[in-house]
Image (cartoon, rainbow, N blue to C red; front, side, top):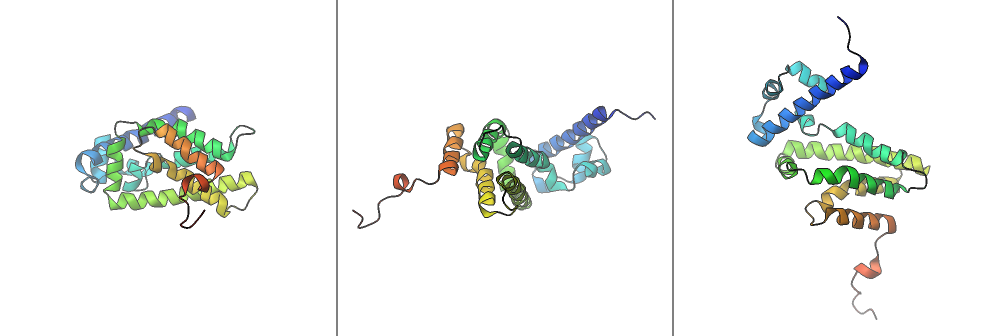
Length: 201
């Protein structure tokens, strides 16, 4: 049998993966995560369970189907930023151009509700976020010439990753993103934000 060219083969794999993920999300939102089996998802996507497991290691991964892509995009935003662009500015630009459009997706509220109401998904999401922090922190450290576990670099990575959750639901999410990154870039302005101490003149 003639093998498909690499480009076409990869496109077919990506299309199958997306079809499986889309079917899983539809079923999870309609019936609830715990009521849907791997077999249900495979049948809805018209694939075998063997094929499903070739694309996803487990049921939780079906919900976070773009996990690896997101991590690669985050680290690339730091490593491939234009000359003279700071790490903080590069991360802010990435959040604004990549995350912000997803924030207004019609299914975002349903997706967030699904994850927050399902203990297994909450735990998986937290583990995923920890891994992203480690990878992004290491990428920032490499750009700064610091050790991979440098605390300041890990802190910046963690805070940057938390920005979407912090600004979700705000009337003007773009402005909120800018405000949080201004704090990350310039620090907490204690004189402007903290009330005077008792007895201070």
